[in-house]
Length: 164
Image 1 (cartoon, rainbow, N blue to C red):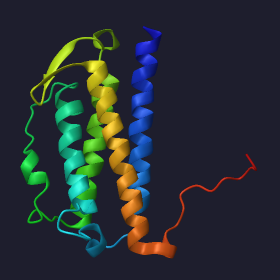
Image 2: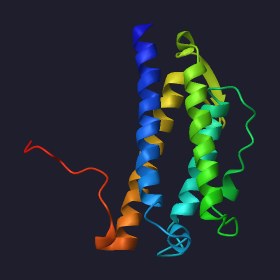
Image 3: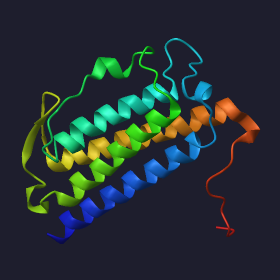
């Protein structure tokens, strides 16, 4: 059971790290930047955040935590659903908090139980692992888009302090 507990603890550390990286970017952007699309086929940071909230809610809060699945995936990608930076941030913060709560309250002995999520039969382990990978992938996209948008004005979150 030690592995399962450590896996769940690491999951919440990964959620927190991705959250912090995304917030670091949002703090450097204005409302216009968040909804900027460099091309009609490229998602804005706002769209990516809406998508992450839907995905995390469906896979972790609902699929792992047992909450009702209320996801409307196509709506996540609509430009017409532009909320303010504050509203988007509050939605993201609530989603992250609920995810961490779902992971904290999850029974580690059920890590290999199969669950039906988004039409797929997945073990809880696979669902969590895949969702965290997805979160980290989109966090990297948000960092990249932020750096493209603000260029030299981008403030690094961490700078190496030792030669290695």
